[in-house]
Length: 373
Image 1 (tube, one colour):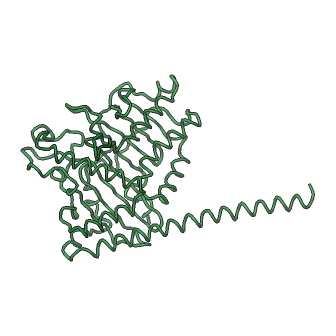
Image 2 (cartoon, one colour):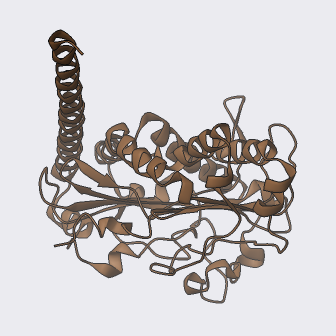
Image 3 (tube, one colour):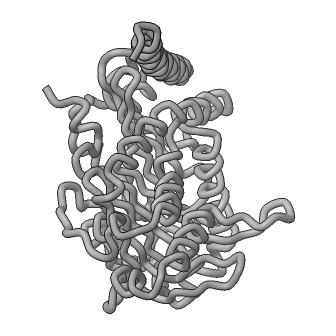
């Protein structure tokens, strides 16, 4: 090998190192700018509140009770703390939603809005279709969050006004803090530490999971259904036998009130999947990981991709669905840093119209790993 060839090899190595440093620096800079944008939106929102409202919204960062005060049930069934959109002026409401939007990707914010719009449909239909039978005890999917027996107040269960926002800690570009936003079928728990962020645990659900708005069909969790079914259909017979559970799972295992619960992975391990199937699995995971703003989502997906061979895919229930309709099967995706559950609710109506999903990182829920001292 000539001296010129050696120089070319060394130069190529230097260029690779420089490019890697530029990529890391650029990503870190983007993350820092995103964090500052969210902090600015948070402070703008807080500035619209009076002192009493600020005291209602702000909690200590380590307030464990407030962290866990989220649910799939309406706020009249499981009370939230913080301040609701109903209690805000138009300016305050606009600032609150701008804060939520700043922490999410455009696609993630659209999903949140679709879930809330679905609750407006519930509000309109509430008088003719009372929830939980006759406003009594809700289904026992998450026993810790049962409603008290007896009738619930009419007209106080559904609607976009009944979503709450709270902040744990003080918004900071350096120190850890947390943004919570949620209500019926929605619980966003976003922990921010500098340029890093964590979206888990987060619950997204939909009831109705399919409705009309402005003449268009809306399916808030449609991609979560369609992509999962496409992955199942991409498996061969041997893989399907491993992935499909013989018994039936009906509800979230790691839903509200189940922080810290450990479950064993089941189903088909992704190490037994083809390259295309793994890509489809990653794309499906992205429906949850991509809710948060893009800089944090990219880092999260890199972590998930690194774990992909240790990730499992489990299916329980019917293996078909009509085009444009949601599946009625439960499925779970589980890896070293990930648990995703999709659980249609078995009710008197079509379970495809009522869906709960859960997104967790068992090692880092509420930013536990990021804030470890």
